[in-house]
Amino acid sequence: MTCRIARTAACLGVLLLLSGAASLAGDREPLAARQFEFTYQVKVPPVPSGSGPLRVWIPLPAEDGYQTITGLKIESPAQYKIRRDPEYGNHGASTVSR
Image (cartoon, rainbow, N blue to C red; front, side, top):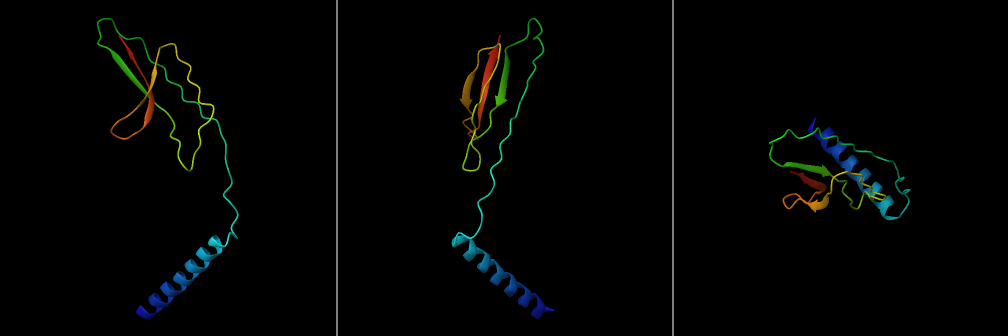
């Protein structure tokens, strides 16, 4: 049983090395790009009279080496600011209603 596992592991290792060599040689096709539109809608009910300030944070999509964000548009009746969360680094649109 141990011999079979070792032989299988050795075969897998050779296959991985060969697949890595092929990718280094540029034999693989590039990954296909995808594009889509995403709509995130938030409805905030009226704040009851006498309540404290209402704080709203709307997360924004992150851009990195795998994802490019274009055409970001925010429509809001309230004034907002784009902010960065200091703890995790996420971006969001924030507003405070008094």
